Each structure stands twice: as structure tokens, then as C-alpha cells.
Image 1 (cartoon, rainbow, N blue to C red):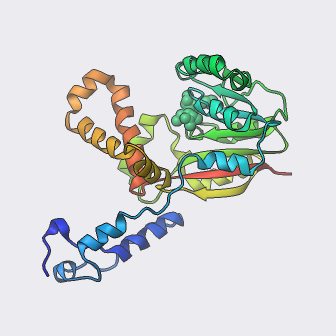
Image 2: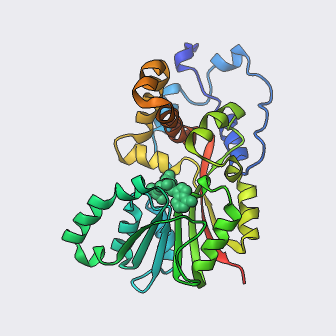
Image 3: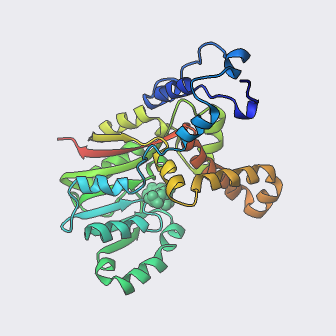
Length: 307
Ligand SMILES: C[S@@+](CC[C@H](N)C(=O)[O-])C[C@H]1O[C@@H](n2cnc3c(N)ncnc32)[C@H](O)[C@@H]1O
């Protein structure tokens, strides 16, 4: 059977092999021999329909709740004191207090981000006063935390270390405010070998990201230099993104469509959004898309103070 290009067979084995090399952090291997026209259009073990059916099956990805499971595995409970560093609008501060009934403090650097969560916090204090009463929010920086040594059982750092220029000092500051036996949960985005230099140039400056922090090996070296050690490491690759596609309104498909529109009508969107927000909007949407196609891969770490 000869299939037209739109329904041609996919080289499943080679794709799976390529992704293995990404997960291991090794350089992406060069594909071996080019596939000939005869090979590509010849019948393979599965029809295109069968391949689609196979790929329609979920691989049971973990979703963002996984981070709370990690905190739960660490024994966070009502007696714990938790710090969410880089807490943004405070949504995880609220969720941590709600789930674990623990005293939770959010520290956020940018006032606009911090204050955008105040209406939700007011609602919470009105409707769930017992949870609202366990929450504190403050403006501050990970580089100089306004807390005494050994204050917290858990430091929660979700998707913020990418912004930090003095990462070693910042992690050492987190270690300082952890009580002995405490732990830090980190969610952090990393580049894979599939992220090309041009992709990186488009992404990191537009997102106020420090490129050096996106190298997973370097990140772990700095963790060690800050007096912490990795107790648990989970590479998530596209799992959260798949989860959000499968369980919700298709967040990343929407981002893909949005980036297409941003690129095709660049002049109009640049004028409407301004240069900073235009570049950030493109990069923010690529952030999602790149996770789906293996150029970015988030990892979750549990870090403990080294004795
Ligand atoms: C991608 S957002 C993540 C927000 C939140 N943790 C979440 O997961 O939704 C990164 C946050 O880190 C904050 N941030 C950047 N530099 C910081 C610093 N030096 N100290 C504290 N927060 C910082 C940013 O303002 C932003 O709110």
C-alpha cells in the first residue's frame, strides 16, 4: 500500500530511542541512516489508523498535584511551618494551608504579583477563616529571607529558581531557614539537548531567566555547594502538559494556537502589547509547547541540608 505523505508511517522505534537520550541528559544522537522513499511508504507493522489508536491511549501522566504528594511524603502536617518562596499570587500558599492545615508563609519579590492574590486571600479569610488564619504573605527576596535560622520544616520553591542570578547564595539562604531535618521541595525547568541555541535566545531573555540555571548538571553542583543534597529527583518531561491536555481544556494546544497567531500578526500584537509583553507572551507559550516536544523538561527535587 502506498500512503500519501499526510498519513505516512512514523518511525516509532527511532523516536522512542531519541527521547531516551534526552531523558538521560546525553547529547541527542544523530539519526543513523536516512530512510528511503521505499522504506517510508512501504507497509509497516501497523497501519496509520492503528498508530493513531495506540497514541490516543494515555500514558497516565502525573499532574501538578504531584508536588503536594511529594510534600505529603515528607510528612508535612498541621504541626509544620511551610515557606513558599516566589509565591506569585499565593495560590499554592493557600492550597498548602488548605491541604495540610499548616502555617504557611508566602514570600514574593514583585509587588504586582503578590497583590494580585489579595482578593482571593480576602475571600478565603471570609469563607474559610481557619485556613485564612494560617496564611501570611510578604514581599521579599530569596536572597535575604526575613526569618530566623531554622524557622521552617519545608521550603517550597515552585518554578522560580530559574530567575535567580546568585543561585548558590539563594539556596544557602533557604538552607539557613530550614530547621534540622527539614526539606526543600523544588520544581524547576531545564533545557534538554533538543533546545537549539536559537530557541534558547528566544526563550530565556524574554522570561527573565538565567540560562546557567537551566543546565541540570550545573544545578545539582550548585545545590551541593549550597550545603544541600539531593534526596529525591523526578524528571517529569511532558507529564504535566499531557495531564493538562487529557484532563482539561487543552492548555498547551491553546498556547500553540496563540503562538501561531502572535507570530503571524506580529506587528499588530507588538503594538498592542508593547515589546516586553510581546516577547514574554511568545516565550511563555513556547515554554508550554517546548515541554510537549522535548526541548524543556521540568524536574522535581527534594533537597535536604547536608550534615
Ligand atoms: C513563574 S512564577 C511562579 C509563581 C508560583 N511559585 C507558581 O508556581 O505559580 C516565578 C515567581 O518568582 C518570583 N521571583 C523572582 N525572583 C524572586 C526573588 N528573588 N525572590 C522571590 N521571588 C522571586 C517572581 O516574581 C514570580 O512571581
